[in-house]
Image (cartoon, rainbow, N blue to C red; front, side):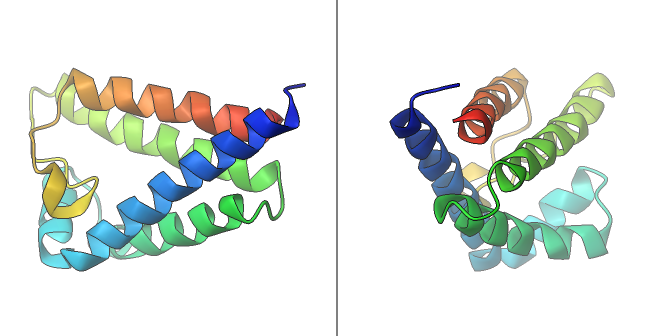
Length: 128
């Protein structure tokens, strides 16, 4: 078991990241939907993603339903990473859109590495 402050810091960090990502997608929803479509994500799923991120991020920040809420964040991140890897394995590198207009860079290894780091932070939040 981790020291409680480390779990709190990890939960707050990953929660803020999720809230920021969701809010960024909503602030540039047209671009987000286009990026999601380019990544092969169904329109109805892309419409839910920002809201799921905001709710999960807020719940983890508030330390509600831990560790399950943090594990849900990890599961979502793994899902995102699978989508990214699927595109990279096909040789397709659409714009990310992960953080709205600020992240239109083409998908690449850095997105996988970033998500792996986020997964570790999510796990720390879950076990802390």
